[in-house]
Structure formats: C-alpha cells, structure tokens
Amino acid sequence: MKLAFYSLTGQTRRFVKKLNLPQEQIIEIKRQEETLLLDEDFILITPTYEDGLEFLDRFVESNHHYMRGLMGSGNRNFGPEFCHVARRYAKTYGIPVLYEFEFNGTPEDVEKVKGILSHGS
Image 1 (cartoon, rainbow, N blue to C red):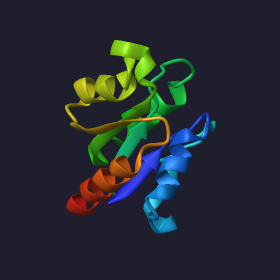
Image 2: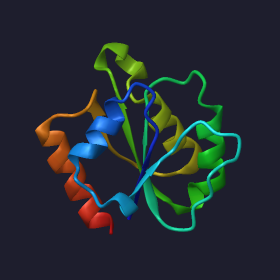
Image 3: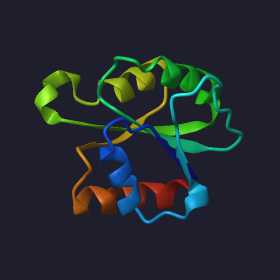
Image 4: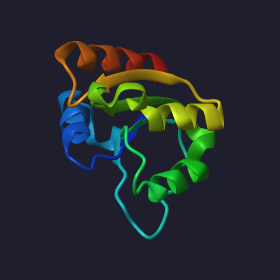
C-alpha cells in the first residue's frame, strides 16, 4: 500500500522519513498545475489547516476511489480544528480516519502507523 502525503512545513515529511518505508511506497504530493493520478491503493496523510489546499482537494477528488484511509497531522493547540482536513475528506468520501498525530510524531506514533500500513498491504 502506498503512503501519500503533503507537507508544507516539513513536519509530515520528517514523520514519513521515520517510517523507513521503501521510496517506491511513498508519494509526496506537491503544489502543481497538473493533478497527480494514481492507479493503486493508498493512504493519505493530510495537514490540519485548510488554506491553500485546492490542489490537495483536486488530488483527493481525482483519486478517492483508491484511497483506503486517511491520517491527519497537526498541532493539538488548534483544538477542534486539529486534523480537520482528514475528517472533512472522511465525511465527504466515506473513507475512515485511521490515525491522527501531532507535529512530526512520537516513536509511538511511528510504530502505530507502521502497524496500520502493514495491515493494509
């Protein structure tokens, strides 16, 4: 199972690096003109914030039929908005939020996500 993510600040990129996944299993979504189209199952890690994510909305709209789960990352100081984007996509597309973590994750977060990915492959 692929792991797709977007990282503006680098926190999520650092988290994904801690997972020690093979490079071919990782898809980093970048702001781009053309929407990336996938043809295999994946789990998406989203940021908490909404602003400027139209490109990510297009990516999800175009690929949601292969999305098997969502994970949210962010800062718990955002209160109820913490991991809001993952929850919004989950509600819109009927896809489960599998995990939520803060910043670049703790060692416990890394182990839990590795377990989720190993069960989904």
